Length: 542
Ligand code: G1P
Ligand code: ZN
Image (cartoon, rainbow, N blue to C red; front, side, top):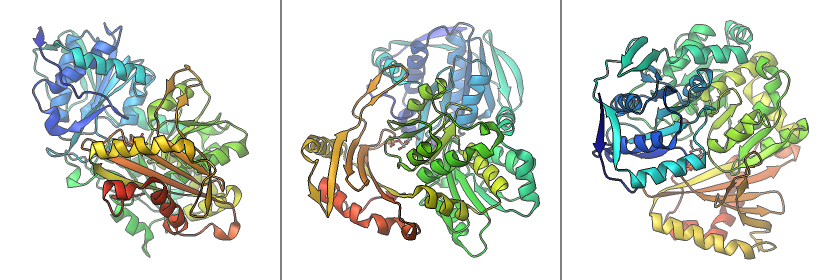
């Protein structure tokens, strides 16, 4: 039986960089989740009889949310829902299921790398039929709907446990509970040389993969240990937990510090990697060598042809604006285009759909390709393993050879978190208003070549996205970028990105923060960020 329930709008349901992300407590308000889901369903057409994918990273509140979403999907006329066993689906696996089942879209419950548990964050993302995040026209429509919502539809039936693979009927809608790993593992096997990787492990190659008690645990156990023969125990923290074991499932040098320390130690394995809450981010560390995500993107693009799925080469590369220009250099040497897009994976979708690019990435530990329409943590790890299996060199050797050929883009990001929103917005606007007068000025011994606020004209659909961050370019190729995060749930996060290009052979092995120290000082002189926020230093340095 379908019920139509009266409701009133919440004013704060504007999707950010990656869906609606809020504290669990906000989502627990009466009808908050239902309002948002109905606003999503009202924004998509041709639902009658269509297929929807539902899954998430297993965080606290997801079990409840999955049941509500199933009951609302049935009441909104969907014909079939594909849902991961126990509700689990990594974001890239959900993207793949949408694509390979011809689904209309998918609802993914995740707040990505944000902490979980009752005091943590929850999130809802909607992906469209190409498997990628809803573009801005759709997210704007969802927000509009949420502001005027007066009712939602839900069916009354209870949902059985989703712990067994199989099919059941829900008010005339078919619910298919699937193994979250199977189809995704098949896809990986079609892209990478599993035999070569298996023989690498057979030869004694060692690896440590930190699943951070998040969604990739079951995927990593199955693919690395069972299918590829990595030694049992190669996957650590492999059981997904609703609060991620109390950790912060963000694979960076702060939150994956234990892995980093292992990889820098005397008995380090050959290869270390980690992924985030929903499995779309990656961290790559060789023995004694951390590879920045922006460098990893460039190195993967340069070596992708070594994997069977990319043996014919890549059509082009895309990177988000704050990501370093290391990938641009690889694209130039391969003779393929490189696109600079605003932050967020949704901007890559059109380029991938049009076949203009094959590999995409962001400095925030996201890398992926045209195999799905999301970034994909395990894909990046597997491509690295495939490259290592073919080249039979260490990660450090591959990185050093890469810098020798292309030069090195020293790169860092400094985050100032939970800044008062008004302070952060005023800071941004004041800096933006000064950019016009900066070109030609000299600061800290460097000359400013250009400065602007980034906007993006999508070459595929002609849409224009403005206000996408402030850029200051120096005449020596260095660059400073300032943006406000679109994924935070409390206050504002100011991100400061700094990049210095070094082509000289003797200078390729230096410490990143030291190389960038002059630029870090210039950033403060130019922007006054620490002064404006009253902070002495950033909360997170990556
Ligand atoms: C952050 C990252 C961005 C990424 C997004 C979702 O967004 O910077 O690259 O796409 O998370 O994972 P931000 O908080 O900067 O808006
Ligand atoms: Zn994520």
